Image (cartoon, rainbow, N blue to C red; front, side):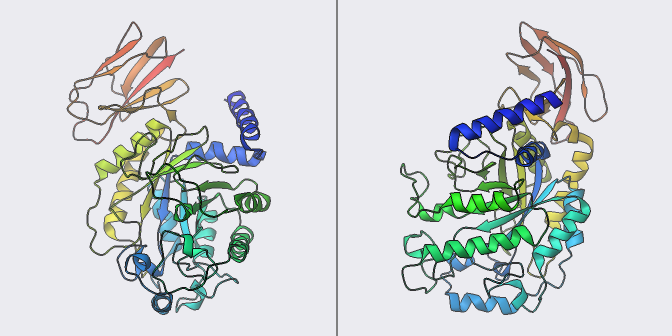
Length: 443
């Protein structure tokens, strides 16, 4: 295994250098390996936008002006927020990392920043949310990623006249990107120097300066100067992974690729147009209902079965699953989210071996389900209880030495003939979301 990892790190390093001149540090490559094995994380969308109960885009969607939106700061007082409970909930769910909103498109900073008055310290709450989460993550040994918006519906120096969103916020002028870039550098420096080790920065908002998804020309209308932004991050914390939710091929300096509400190869959400998969860790993010931020009227909760199957398909595709919650303004997490996360944690206590530290299957997900793999084992995830037989064509192993159900080691019949493995699966699911069959194999 050590030899395989060493060869992987060398391959990635040379590939990165050849592609864009960016040479990841040894600690960065190790972090990529860890990230690719982690498989499951918690996304948290929370801030003053939670107060109206209409999602995190409420400022843009309702055309609220900067003057009026700023008043939400006087009402944001999450007295029931408990960082220890939040992090413990994530651990109980089997999640390996948390991605926390630090500053969304509305421009509100969830930490004690020197570079904007629109921040958590100027609310009635007056406590640094990022510090509380960071301290608790370090204490409970959960990795912390920080979401940071590249666009801002509030600042005058953001080049909003060329942006696709935030056009009704009452700003005037033409923006000043040099000033805005320095502002972002200052804030990122705070986040990467005052809160201990940060596992990654999760950027969003690039698409505000491009043509809509689905159009052939998706080049940015401004030069974001990512070489400076990414260079700063890797200088401050070399191991820190960088991802950017631009819905495009990864740019120079990025360490993982992300898909929004899609698995790689899909475009069900319409956001993955022209987004080929690259040879780096990949993550997909999804919501429990249909909203990222707290939404009073959105009760379209995905079932426990749906979420388990999504996690299995993500592992079968070889990507991480970042599952979102939108806490309430007071800092509580609604019971519908808590119940589903707890159930997924219970499932992972039994089936985690088939998710963590695995690679995507040699076959893409099929109508019956998917497979995940690790050295010596193939995990067959049967996700459709109507199936009677699962067929694995072009099976890449010469021999199957043992086949059994992961949950209780019950033996399962399997036949390998002329490179095709056949497994009778009728009745195996027994009202479970995923019947996992383990095939122990030899090359």
